[in-house]
Amino acid sequence: MKKSLLLLTLALLTLFSANGAVVQTSTGLKATKDSITTEVRFYSDGIARILKYVSTDASALNDPKLTVTLSPQTVSFTYADGTDDVTLTTANMQVKYNKPTG
Image (cartoon, rainbow, N blue to C red; front, side):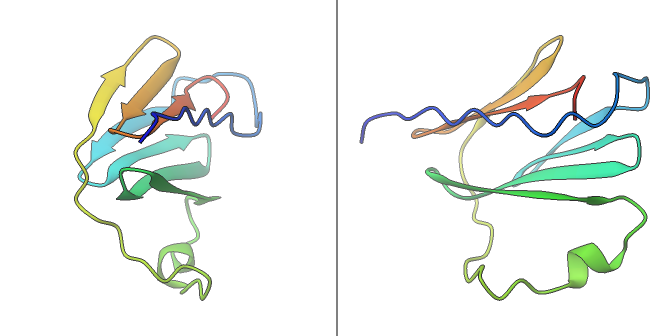
């Protein structure tokens, strides 16, 4: 399958601040910028789900989304932490998280 590039530029929230923590997870990444948490979860090597929620909203993770019928899968990916971007690459896609903008 032809390798596709998925470039995710998430909404500009605020200027870059020092509290922008990015952590690799078994299914992708979890990043917190100001009070907003962003998660990338791979469902296959060609499907990624992006979750974005207020960090203090505990119900955001427990609230079932009826349109999502898959569960995150174990997908082989590379994790490259650059100066401004974190890049996750699978066999069929590439996802970029921009640290300064969240």
